[in-house]
Length: 411
Image 1 (cartoon, rainbow, N blue to C red):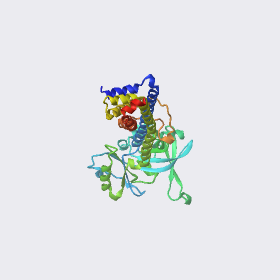
Image 2: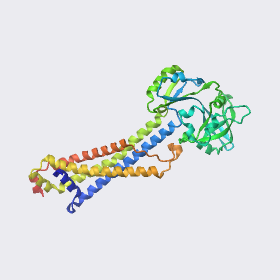
Image 3: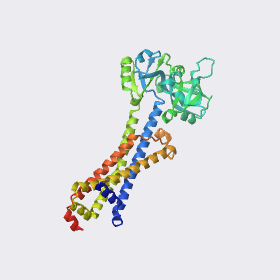
Image 4: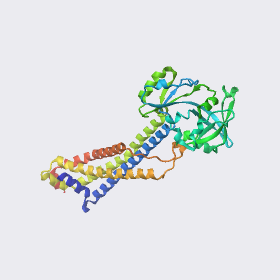
């Protein structure tokens, strides 16, 4: 161990005669610990929140949407030739989308109706894995005049709000066309509740009604037409290339939009919030850095005679500066290590025990999601140590500038 590190550790430990320096050292290390722990835990929650919403959106939306520019839709035909030769495309499925008014014996509510191909849709969105009540195969039941009303699946929150049970008869009404104020009347269609879906996103679970495409085409008078095509890719984040090639193939027939484009405002807000939270909580570390600065200045004042003797014995200004730089760095290192450990512990507790319950209609999710990314922890640690090192520059230079004879005479 060289003498700079030896002196730095000795000054860090302090003595009974320099109790003030020891106390401020403890306070500074504790401040760094609290700041780092708060940053690590908060970034874990913010990252978990984003990843949780992302996973749930991709569990209910296709990676790409092929949508026509007009409300007339696309012809209901096989589009396999347009997807051929694009290796990133895993599956595609047509859908019919529209709005309606759902009525049960317990109430009425506006809903979003999605008609899907029960055989193709699972490969695109995985909606079949979101079924909590009923059997997905029910959606494939063929329509017949003598058969019971067509089956539908309701979002969990929607079913709960309307107290809809399996087997209940419901009615969905859609506009027959034209302006409702000028004579456009809603036309009702009977259906049967065959199942309940839970995507985990409140907006979906509180308004979504899923039925087979034939039922939706009859409901919206769109026989032989579809609202668009959903596409699943091998990588949800690598959508730029496939989207461009699909746009070229569909030309003016339809526009190709990614899941991120559809939800860009939400993810932009989450990204901005994460950055702002990082900057705000970094102020705690900045305050701790000022405490380290004041601690080094205090130690410099208390150890002036020792510094003078060291200079008289041949210690260079650079060596004296390195002593105080090392002392500040060690304090920052101790605080950062303890803060990372504490922050990871808090994140683990939040992940294991649901201390915080969230209103799903406000935050999209019902529990506090937590995900620790090593990159975030590394950024926090490096940023903290950089702030601490910057805080040590002035006091270390002040100590190095002390004249040996003046320092000895002064004490």
